[in-house]
Image (cartoon, rainbow, N blue to C red):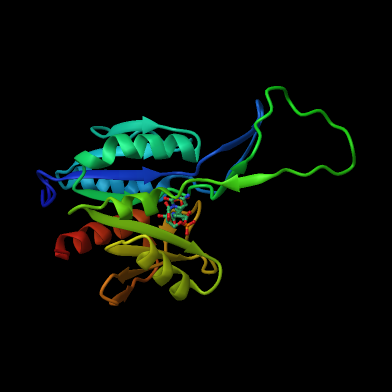
Length: 217
Ligand code: PMT
């Protein structure tokens, strides 16, 4: 039961962290569990949307009635997004995409050797920036996870990536951001409006994001 206020809408969600290979057994990643993105996918599904979920590796169960595409690296996520975004009315990027990847992925496992070794990294593509440049009449929602200067950094990302809405997680607060079942966020809009939300379950944050999307345009 409940409102099917997303009936007829196609929603693309990205979730989880990416893994950037170093060698056949090692990678660089981050603490994203996928909970926030999966909550959005489930909420959109429950509200009648046709949902595609592009997910990095997680331990979460695939939501039923959601088309799930599994990826590992930022490059793979970018390829999947490029395949899918044209069909979407709304794109929500909750994934924690690695900004950098190793320059070289060795074919063999790196052997233990000197006391200190270094790893050279290179920039990954910015998927959300690509989406912003190719937005058309889609609604584009990003996330920002920050440990300092939350509002300034989120505002910059909103502008630079041509978003309609950015969901800013304050990682300094208990019950916010990576791993936990709750989140504490502020919604920042392209027109400068800001809506601060109290701590609440990620599913409730997801529903408020969807409510907000319906007020845009
Ligand atoms: O998965 P959980 O454990 O539930 O945690 C949820 C979360 C904290 C991961 C999520 O709520 C969140 O904030 N996701 C975005 C985290 C992040 O990587 O933020 P960012 O400030 O680095 O990136 C800003 C935006 O650009 C994000 O929408 C991100 O998906 C996107 N991006 C970033 C880098 C890149 N190369 N490509 C991108 O598209």
